[in-house]
Amino acid sequence: MMVNHKPYLDWMQLALDEALAPPQRAELEAHLADCAECAEQWGALIRVTQLLAAEPLAAPRVGFTGRFKARLAQRHSRPKEVWGAFALGLGALGASALVLPLGLGVLWTLAQIAGQPAATAALINSATATSDVLNTFGEALWVAARALGSFALGTPTLWLGALAALALTVVWFVVMGRLVRQGSLR
Amino acid sequence: MTEQDLITRARAGDETAFTGLVETYQTAIYNLCYRMLGEANEAEDAAQEAFLRAYSQLNRYDPARSFKTWLFSIASHYCIDCLRKRRLTWLSIDDEALPPHPNLREPALGPEESAMRREQSAVMQKVLSQLPPDDRSVLVLRYWYDLSYEEIGEATGATVSAVKSRLHRARGVMADMLKPEAARAPQSAKRTARPALAAEGVRR
Image (spheres, each protein chain N blue to C red):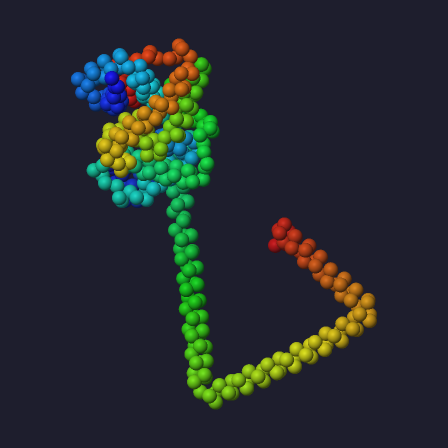
């Protein structure tokens, strides 16, 4: 006949917690005398409880309370960081509060102009004139650059000198940068 | 000054009074964290964090309850959170040997006995580390602090029947894990095949 071991396994757990009634204790004892499998399990459970009971308390390193005080002090300083972030956010909000009305103002003005045909025509004329002036200025610059280029190509000493000056400037920036990083210049 | 006086003063913002409570419970909380996390530095961090949380939540503490149990509740929940986060980052620690704790409070032992205790301790810590966090906390609170089912329930937020079930499961799993080790142990170290029921209830 197959024996159901489950109740005995449950009783073992209760026995470990001193919560098993005497009649069941006696029944468990009788079962353990006959069942090698349950006896092995009982032995292992006893071993577990013995090992657990023998395990000492682990203590922290000396100075735990001092380290706690230091952490608490550090924690107190955190609200300042929070306030800093809050102030930054508030500043950003303020800046956008300034920019937003300005942008809305520009849009509103453009909408007003678009509503008046004469003003729109004047605005288009003004934009065309500004564009013409900028084009003329750009062309003049282009002509000047071409003239300077042909002159430089004709006189190699000039552009060699220019390159040397550029190289010296780069060297100066590099040296100064290093000195500043090393803290020699304060 | 009594514990209640210290708590009252700490609730009024007296850090020195709270430091007194830290002094009293540092080993208990640290040991809980160490048994839960298995590593001394992590245990130190967790214990410190548990006390900081306790200090900041002191106004939520109900003086009708045990202060120690309340601290255990904060520390065990924090450790369970740490273990869950760790599970996301660590693939497995199954085969890693856990380093022995440098500062175990036990009586002075001879070299041989001391070596055996260290080995036993390492086995115990490894077996503990393989239990689910919730089961582990129940087991630690039961065996290191001798808390009742009700107190463990209060500390872990579980019902008494859940506590019993976790405790039984944890012991069963540990017994299964220790069976192969027992089989490898020298004959002299083996216990009798059927330990008497008189050995039951071996607790701290």
